[in-house]
Image (cartoon, rainbow, N blue to C red; front, side):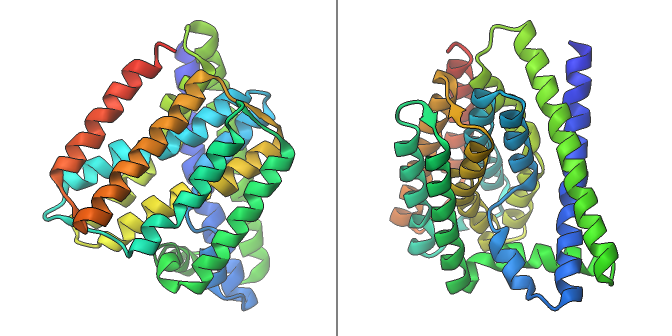
Length: 310
């Protein structure tokens, strides 16, 4: 068990380091090559490379339920624990993004639910989900406000990266390699946990792999809301929902068709419930506060207790 914990921790650190290096290298390469940074920001909008690496690594390892749990567990964690903590620590109520930004991810969530209705996501369905993500990216490009948070991150990382194309490209590729190593360690730790407990693979993916791979996203929720930069937090929140239910799920299914167990499907249902609750409050009240924050944080604890029994 100690080795499993060590692998989980090492994998998490490598994922974070690799994701930062990959984004920095990609941004610096785009800047040196004259590629608009906005294009990189739009393409990566909502995509957490740490989470993508973890889910893809689990699928490649032949753990499809673990991969599915990681995908939906990441979203559930962000909409409950991370976003809830931000609401509880914010100095004032958090303003809602424009209604179209709140509603746009619903199409991806509904499509993902349809694809997962039989507990399977085949490669054809993965391709369709990836195509839907491409449509969403075009929408992000059309509405520049959506990509602003990711663009700011890419610009910041690009300024810290190499100024020449070749070193920048090397940095990006090294970052992707480190992500692969981190994902391998994280998944191996998860597999070892599975072999020593009675937890379902989908639950380990949702409550452990997905959470560890997205811990850095907590700061992307808490800090902006503390500083009154609501659009950064909400943009990241709804963008991640759209990207993970289409692009990340699609890519993972292309790596290996997914077979989702009851725990992974429960994570999807919990994700849909959280989205409906958060989106409903934003559309009804125009803002959200500590009551919603306490509600989603509490619901996450309840869901963990119930899902662990599946």
